[in-house]
Length: 317
Image (cartoon, rainbow, N blue to C red; front, side, top):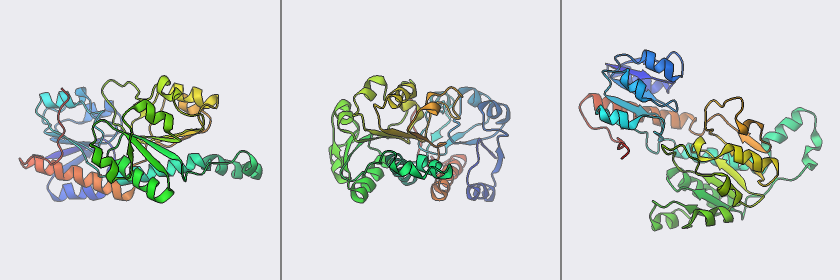
């Protein structure tokens, strides 16, 4: 049996597959074109943020399972897989702590202008320290758009560690969960945005591709708000975000994700001031990479042995 892997995963998981008698093949390039051409007769696939398209599924006649190396399956053709009876699995909560810590890191970097300060020192501009102060996060309101596992970790770190007031919006989370994690529940998304000093996004993407935060929603934020996005690049209208940063209607933003990855040369975020960009590395810690990869391979082994994997997602209605 063969497992086809679209992008590098932790070598510990590759060794474990080999020990279980499962061969591995890697895509020659992290592109869907290469995946479609090379997936061949693989019985299993592990994919990261590249996803796995309907055409890739059609190109894999022996495919029995698609394992997502993470929690977001919006780039996998789940419905097409379901029509073939192919389960799609997730690495549930395997990276939540690492992404939460990345969220806090970006929040602090934006608040204290860390990246711009580093550049200034390297360019000999020691007077940067007089060019507009940063902001202290203690006592500020952190607004969490979504309240899943990652957001709950963020709430704990920001509340207990930084002394922030944490508010959250999520229509699918029970009332008692907010209180248990130190967050106040806000019923209306507009009310949440108006209260935010720092806004952090933690909602999954949907099939429509429409941004959750469009120009109207961004206009509800206070002028000195910081925005952090470690969830999905499609969650924010980046052109609208750039426009608000240019005129100073937002303090700063930090994005670990973009609508297209890698970004196109004309991506608006690339020319936005007061914006920190990182290349989708929220889950890229040694610990999270091991957990995600091992969760993938255990679910593949279960499937190929005729057992139901632990974290199969349901196809969309």
